[in-house]
Length: 155
Image 1 (cartoon, one colour):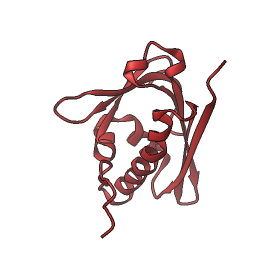
Image 2 (image 1 turned 60 degrees about the horizontal axis):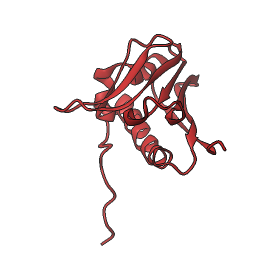
Image 3 (image 1 turned 60 degrees about the vertical axis):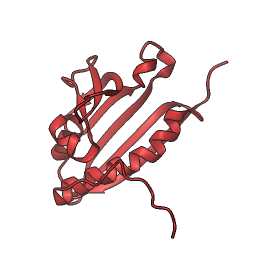
Image 4 (image 1 turned 135 degrees about the horizontal axis):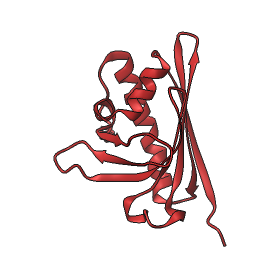
């Protein structure tokens, strides 16, 4: 029996250009400013990519392959915990679709082929909104937000 799959879609609008949004996703020196991680690859179809923590330990948090690259409008990658890198069923897929929208950009992130109910599926539902909010803040104001922040307890 195959595992049930689920997906997560997040759309945001950013006062920027498609090229700047694409660069923010693919260039490690920009990604670390809003994500606290670097996305490392040569960004060629079939190449590997790593999501590396931008701290002294430089721990690899995620791995995958580049599926499709059409700068500056589309990037598709596979996505897995390094502990499941040898298990094809452990991979999900992330598509970044970047489209001009009046004087801004519409960024649609579709994370699909996720195992329904898995820790990864739950994690990305919390992770993508704060990461993409930080990306938007960085590109619009020059400063990202703390993606590692936790909710404060009610007084």
